Image (cartoon, rainbow, N blue to C red; front, side):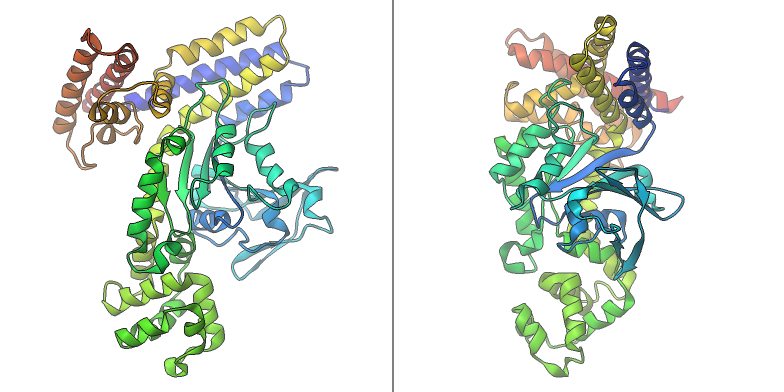
Length: 498
């Protein structure tokens, strides 16, 4: 196990000890079941919720991440219900009503999306749905599809608020992917509420922003996603957004979903457009109406044209046809890979890996400690001081939590300094990911010798800053955390040699 892995495994072990103490203190009481559930979550996949305003593209993005069209993307009943997607040995849907026992729900797969029979119940009568589906992605993370924030119907939005920002309970999600078109006030209010109130709070470590429907920016030109990348970078640098999410990643969700589920028949239909003269194709793709109605000699029926628009959008049809025409891709597999990369999905997956999944043990421990903290505050008893002391001991002494506190202070503007120094500090403490090359701003293929030299240089720099009497107090405290981070990287590299 790497040094970083050993540290996080030790953190989970210490968290289990706290949970055992809490379970002993609250045995036989109303909080015992809640604490047992929290303990079980430590060994389960990371729970990642996908949230955002109505029509932000949440279900479409979920399908793209899973690699299958499971979540319904229309405005049907099921899109108004919190739905959990988790790995399972068989295909199963469980319906949990507000009143009565959970029961299995019948479902069918229409147009490759699940159609779930609510058994005569309305969406108001269903608390949540749980979809078990054999999936490699879902072995790593349980994904939670949530109703839209800011819905015209308040009770629909309230479901997401109650799940991810409850007033008096711990949220069942370890992290959130939040989709937004711009930094709307409702988006910022929701993200503020989602952040922990007690453990290392406030902190953006468990939230990532997504600039959704990026293909609709700039009129759907071929350089649209480059424009969206620049806009996302500006959003991520906005101090109001920066305090609430780690970063903002642009993604064309519809194109991403289609890319990972692309068929040879769809490629054949796109090739019809690609075979047209460039000017003719450009004129045809000026608008959706033109594409539907003009050039009957194209050889595509109105149903086939509508299907292409539904699956790709106008931008996706234009991009796919261009890639085929330029011989960048020829087969469905090649085109799928190109569209997946260009949609922003690969960049989002890399971001999720570095900021969520490499930190899964830290995020799980953090969620569990928050849950214990909320219980002892809600129901203090004779054993409360001991349990609270154990929670505080972990939070104060565990280096990963110290990194999170400094990251929060940086994002809030409480730790300041020269821009280059602040940027380096954020990287070193894992603000861009916990892998050694990310902390040291080196390429992924950097060798051991290069990593060790860079880590030693970084360690020396932060030691000088910590000891310099001219360094501001807040930065000197943060520098000591950076020193520990550098020492951890060096220990990990030395351990890798043995």
